[in-house]
Length: 109
Image 1 (cartoon, one colour):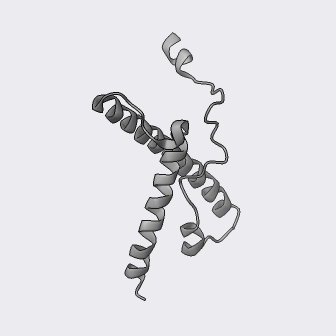
Image 2: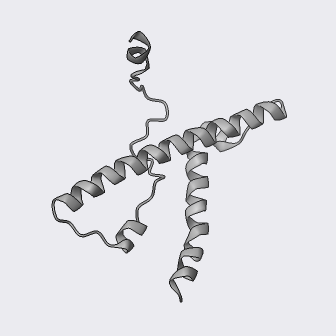
C-alpha cells in the first residue's frame, strides 16, 4: 500500500480518538448536550471544542519539548514512533481539579 493510502486510512481512527477525547472532556451527561435552546447547545459545543483544542495544543507543546530533549541527548526517533503519539492524551488532565492561573499576576502588573 502506498504511503499516501496508509495515512488516509489512519485519519478516521485519529478523528474518532479526537471525538472521544472531546466527549471525555464534556463528562457531564455522558457527553450529551441537554440544553434548553439551540443557542445554549451551540455555546456548549463551541466551549468543548475550544477546551479540546487548548488541551491538544498544550499536549502537543509538551510532547515537542520532551521529544526535543530526547533528540538533544542522542535519541533517534523514527516517523513510526512519532505516529504512535497522540495529542489527545487524558491521563494528566484534571477534569474537576484545581488549577493555578497566572492571570491574577498578569492583571496586577
